[in-house]
Image (cartoon, rainbow, N blue to C red; front, side):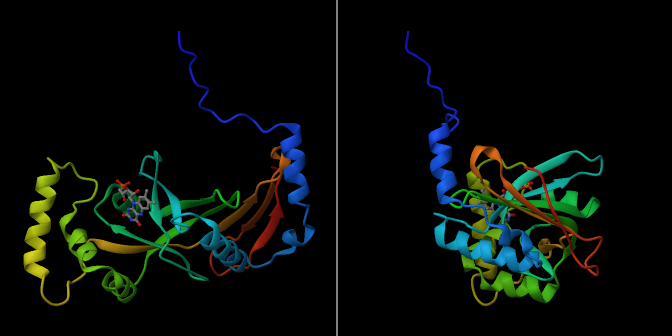
Length: 225
Ligand SMILES: Cc1cc2nc3c(=O)[nH]c(=O)nc-3n(C[C@H](O)[C@H](O)[C@H](O)COP(=O)(O)O)c2cc1C
């Protein structure tokens, strides 16, 4: 009988951890950071330089009005002191959940850096001007696709989608494609941002920033791994 593969990677050995520890000295200065957005920007720049693709990919967690959780990946399309922005179809599963329960959590995991950032807070729509500007920066085919896709609803087959794409391409092929009213930008205004970095023996570094709302100053805490 063929031996079955152990597909879970093995836990690092003591030697591997020791090698890692030598490359990753304790850095007390890291815990003195006071501005989580500045720290996020710094890590994001490092991720852009080292991730093989989509350094702006983030898991977006939402919950329906009964509290049942849901999660999927989306792309970060704007980040500033105002918050973390992404774009999607407001009639999708996540759009419906956010409509009823406008709070969300985000999680970035940059494998090449062995770092994680968690963000959570209330969710608002970006302005129509901001959404229009981003929509019109996208490729024409993506704009048509936003009209054609009835995101998260059942679809008979690819042909049905292609027919819809052809229909909207004929309608909006010439001139500016308007932004579909159901295609919106969302902003997670952070009330909690946690930075995590890998350290040997699973004794990781964690730095948490919290505030009651966007008008308050951030508080900081170092957390047990
Ligand atoms: C790396 C990655 C990035 C994605 N980015 C987006 C995005 O920015 N907006 C979006 O609507 N869907 C995006 N998707 C697709 C979503 O994960 C999801 O399939 C879709 O939005 C429907 O989710 P929902 O049914 O929970 O609404 C992305 C998927 C992956 C894997």
